Length: 181
View 1: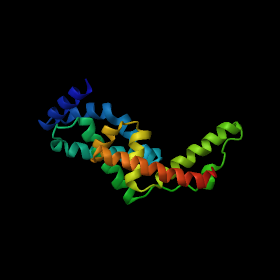
View 2: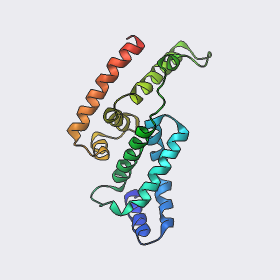
View 3: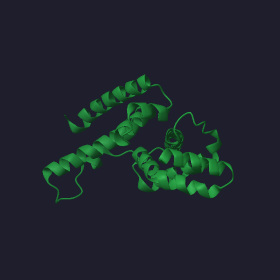
View 4: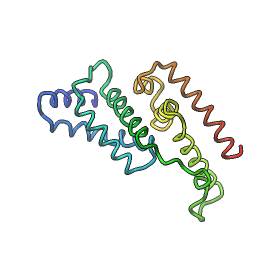
């Protein structure tokens, strides 16, 4: 149902009914905001990035060729917006010592250890080279399958699989050093 709604809204927009863009925003604002947050780990910045992605999508709706699903085109365009934003102003790198600190003394040791590990992983992912960070973000954090992640990034599936493998290897080495495992 969403695909046909997207197509209908795009057609209405291209014929001059700008109000039809509201339907697209309502359907896709959650997923785009989530994706933006996975890129930068800052809610305010993610909202700005998602808004910029919607603005660019609106301006370039005419370039959607309908060979791919609207969602694939939208996520590919948004991913490029997010990458460019992170190049322009890189995310604040987490100080690994502070990422490993426990902020709530009421947590159990297991909870605290899990939170520390999660923070270390997020920080290490943000520090990866963009091609590995983007692949890991789409596949693991945004839960896209290999085919959808590859289409979104505009690379062959084999390239995406290689980037996932190499990104995991880099993370494994970095986290072994950081966490002492």
